[in-house]
Image (cartoon, rainbow, N blue to C red):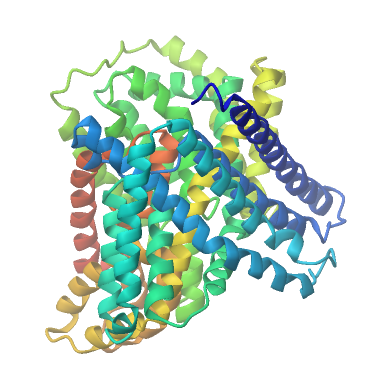
Length: 613
């Protein structure tokens, strides 16, 4: 069969290569546009008013085409812990069922996406004064291309029986749900469990890509139990995936790849190893400290992780650290540093609740430091008996030599943070400063810059970013559906009815925001529940900055906790580790973080001790 369809595979190769090159060039264009905006505004005192708008348009195209590349390569994030335990014939059936379910989801949203793009024709962008359809059309075109490559993958498998059986199974399931649709509309909030726990949860456990599982649950809920048009979900996806803050994700991914290619990462690792390499698990401590150092610069946890992991992971793997342990610690440090300024979550919580942002910035440093110490204690415990290679302690002369070599690389986080603090660049633009800085260091200092690797790096950046951003878009659509269901009002009523005073309220808040963090992410959850629950905390005598720290850190755990935490899958994608490998190691880290949050919750001084009286 494959021999007779050789022409079809050639078509797939041509289209796939074209998509990869376009996506790679889009990454390059975003870097050039944003850096030009920085130079024009700061150096030439002549701002380019349309630069952010054009970058936002190109970014949505980058996100969708990156998702296409990830689907073609089979690199969308999946949870296969259960499926991987099955014998080969059964695992093959689950793989085919996942492909069919993905194709079904893409089919369901293709028409609404097309209508959404048509509706945007009449909207004119403020700066460029062009039709917004130029941006919105990225969504239906990306979905159409994903549909095409999904079909190509099914044909390539050349296994007709599993495909037919998968179609029949999915058809029966859909038929049952469709037949009971009138009854489902009468069930009210019970549909939340049926669709968001049942459909999405089972799909995730069955090995369906995370983004498609989130989207399938949302579309099924809206289509079968409400009268909401699916175009609205496409709008929420558009809003989430074209947010300028998230443009830092691909740019920091590219920055990490550049640091590796130019030798900056190697120089940094050699120096850091000279300080802690002789200590068992020393680079794990470096990972915790590095995340504390760069956290908050980009406003995105995924971007923070993308700036750190490529520099540290290769050396840590060479020293014998298991990949699952690496990604678990990366995710845990991402959760731990949610309160470090200038955190976008801190700014959001201040804006929607009226809490002083400067007070939040002051109160957030120590709680994150305490959680970081607890993580380091767990790192020490886990490494105390493991036969990891630790290296030989270097001499002082060697350390001085490596410090001099590594200085340009070590200075990079300080250059990035200084650019933000001094107002030279926004949290998104600052990543382009890091990219240009890395290129200059590679060309002039380390003399290591392979031009032939640039395009593959740009394509890999687009692929990884697309996998992350499609999850964020699908999760945002799910968050909107949960809001429309009245879920937020239900949570507020339950919290207001609690007995037991501030102690019970804080404990329940931790539990609730861990759950909310896993399904809504930080900013949507804050916008929804902050104005509702902060007044309750004040009535119980809980300091608003103290409560903010408890809320943010709890949501951080939820954001990075499998099986629903989006941040965990972002960490796995950045570290290029199968999500299954990190599930067991991360449990211990999450428990350690939970202990830290309880300390923060019941020792208010940790959050408010340094606030002006």
